[in-house]
Length: 205
Image: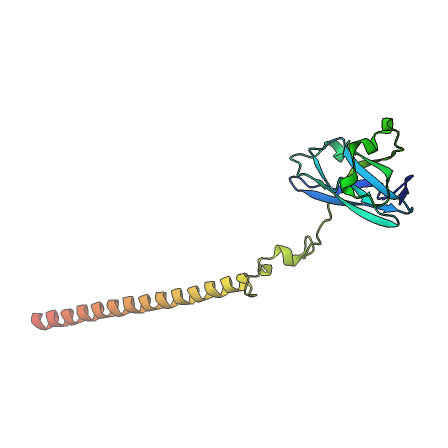
């Protein structure tokens, strides 16, 4: 935890797990270890890119305040994943019992005679966490079609094989039936020819 004159700030840099076209948030905690009411204000070098909530407020004596910084989705990654954006946290002692409504821009103006404490925070992009793979890469289960499982829990590959075997049996039955029909037809024609030959022979005798 980094100590300022008035507030302790954690962390000392804003880390965003960068992903393209995705809105990402990170948190900042301000701790007031003193007996004073401390007003704060957050500024950034790129206000269109970030949303800070709250961007100002009052930290009560011996208490903390959490700030959420949200980065808008980016269309492209910066070179070498380096970010030049900066944040400036200004803090100043406020009057006892002060609230966020009592904060004025003049309070953070050093020229107005206020003792303003300033702390700079840089933005750091980090790699997003990778979800664990359910199947080892290069395993037999991953490459085998038998590993594909349908929603009802049955292997689609097994279903395909069973269906294929059934179709083959049906085709075999159809082929067998056609063969029997053809043989029966040929047999009938042969018998008919034999009968005709016999009649012809009888007629010639």
